[in-house]
Length: 294
Length: 252
Image (tube, rainbow over all chains, first blue to last red; front, side, top):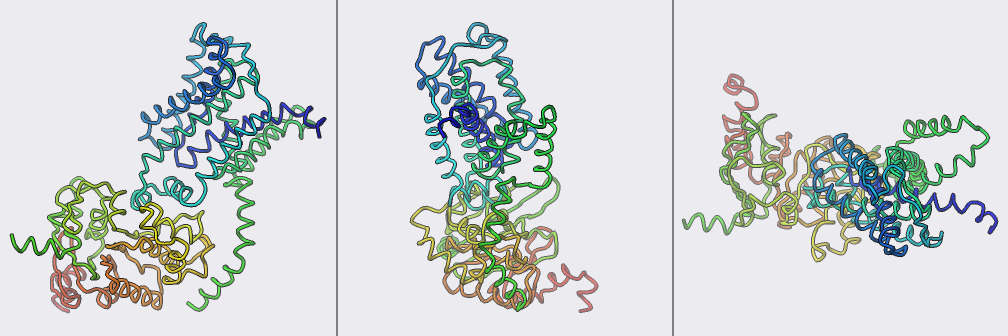
């Protein structure tokens, strides 16, 4: 077990940080907000964490906290600006925000290290820390999916007019999704960066949107479990399919395409459907009788 | 002045000179009406007469061009739609609107999720009672898309009544139901009336409206053309004309 852990510690840590990144995109999607600002938050969190350690000589956890909070505040501010947008327009505006973060990083001079980025910020972070942080984030995610809160968020996403008619403040929920997305994205960015000790503008780019989206598409967009499944699949896939060598990207693309076409709710959706069908077998039989009588 | 004061004391809902215009289209144009507590009111009218728009305006989902809406004398014309639910006004929609990924039980609970904690009556027992009442308890864990349209209508009805509203607005509550189901829903409406729930119904089934309602309003092209006892309203020449046309109405 310990040998296996030592051999795979980087993959385990990357799975957890990818999971947090995927969650930062999944949370707004669950609220019906087509926002990719979580990736921009990842950049803000990463750069702020390194700047705090390198320039301000802060220790690890205050640096992580500063990166997380700043990302949350900035993305919440972005939410105030773009909250009236929907669908593709929202997607474009938030992707533009992410690209702006990258451009600012390139042109930030000594503060951001320019195109070469910043180095030498190795945080005192171990797998146990990331597991504990992920557990706290999961607890928040579970709260947003369970009972009344989960129902209200589903209504905000699926039918905003109905949400208004039953007393839900749709705008408030949408804004909250920006703040949560920013905090989680910033946390993922700060931890990832301080684990690697370095960040460059090239790492905070459109490819992160693809990574997060594909994890959600394959895993499932309606629950944190989907984001975790997606993160596990895509972080461990290269190891599992190493025998296909240069065809790896093709396999990756095929998996995403098959999931998008045949699994609209991801792997988790399939599992949930099966469980639902088994659990409601008796009810469906009673319904058939009722409808026959009717 | 005295009349107004008395009316204010007895009316649950008052609509004063209400107008909803969409550009040049006058969907509702100068409607004034009152509803007393514990009665069933219905609104009849051909397609496009403004019935559903009137319902939307009363729930504040549809912006008003002119006029006022009052609940127990309290003007709520400027109250946002999301707060109207907490005032005790619940509604169903012309097309069923349920969460397809949630169970029947969850969809019904949604109707009281936003109410103050004290207004949520022992949730578990209350939802069971409401499901029993509308006849969906047997299918509580199923998802709406596994149910017939008529059953989905019942779930929406249950969602509207679980919060014990004072005013219940029902937009075509029996659409898609068979005769027996319509009769059941009609009976349920009368039971709710006897418990003091005022209801305002938009429905195309004239016979059901006559059988169920205490008072009917008839609308045509955004205006009120008749109101009163259900049979009187149905037989009113202006109503006949609106439904079947001038010549046919005269011949009838």
